Image 1: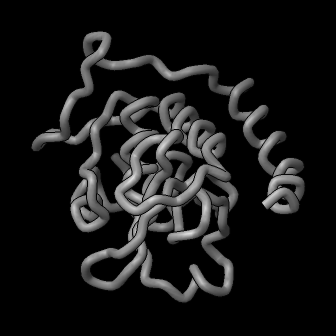
Image 2 (image 1 turned 90 degrees about the vertical axis):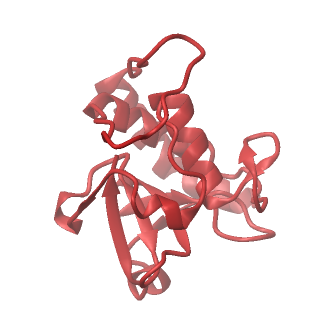
Length: 168
């Protein structure tokens, strides 16, 4: 774990710093303390919000995995991570399960992918999801015993999976 953090630090810090300088923090929507729910109208995220989502997700790398988890203190599963990041940084409450995330926002092509978009894996009903953070990478909470991590879409394992992309 310590080695992974040392190896990722040169990659994450420059990316996070560049995003912070370029974008600042995203404006919140709605009244303080309220989180709008997703209904028939899809939320539209600004480029600032999308970048803020990615920065926040990168900051959670190393958080323990926990099935059903949805807080940094308690750990995350993949949909809990997405729900936490979107609620805290964009004021949007995505669905809580991966299968429900497949109808969240709008479908996009791989060529349209930008920071903050969702990446879902699996043919038919998806079984895993993460947040795209740019440069072919995504943040996700992969499995029991693991931690939230940064992976490449073109890695040997993930490139073989059926993939869907969604933009909230």
